[in-house]
Image (tube, rainbow, N blue to C red; front, side, top):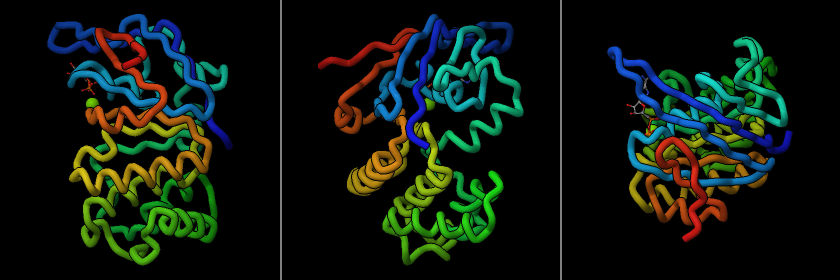
Length: 228
Ligand SMILES: Nc1ncnc2c1ncn2[C@@H]1O[C@H](COP(=O)(O)OP(=O)(O)O)[C@@H](O)[C@H]1O
Ligand SMILES: [Mg+2]
């Protein structure tokens, strides 16, 4: 499938903690075209991960609508959200979260198996993705037998195995040194471009953020376009 168009309408999200209310997103509005790529910056604690969790259906807003191609995912039942997430959303986190006892190819194939693909199809896709990530000679390695940059490339391949319409990346290269980060980032961008996925990248690197033609800053609970 190609990219998902995303729209947030009047989204609010607060957390209740120890009797206090932490208001994170307040009347947040945003529109992303299908296949659009944006970067998001903002100070630590401003709600960037919260926003990605709402978009990725890992959490629900307190109020407001979140539309995927005009379907309100905030109002959907959990079973529908699980299916949509598994099929159409790819997550890349700062930490790779690979399963340590499984090889690279199995780690990448697992989401496809969970979505109902045969073992042969899932492994075929996983191998092709690992090759595209420059890991053709590492498919049998376990995470502990790979470098940090290689582990993150496996995690990116895993995020892409279902051909997601939306890719959400939360500081995807935040744990890597600058030279490694650059290579991993470029490969992620190439793969997203090939798939035509809509892409949201949270980063604290102004250099990485600046490579996107559309840049957003999350400030005081809402998005601002960065124009300089
Ligand atoms: N599950 C939670 N319960 C209570 N407060 C939370 C929870 N998750 C995040 N927060 C708070 O919400 C705010 C935004 O967090 P987060 O989205 O992780 O920010 P960012 O990713 O921009 O650093 C922070 O003040 C954080 O402490
Ligand atoms: Mg965060």
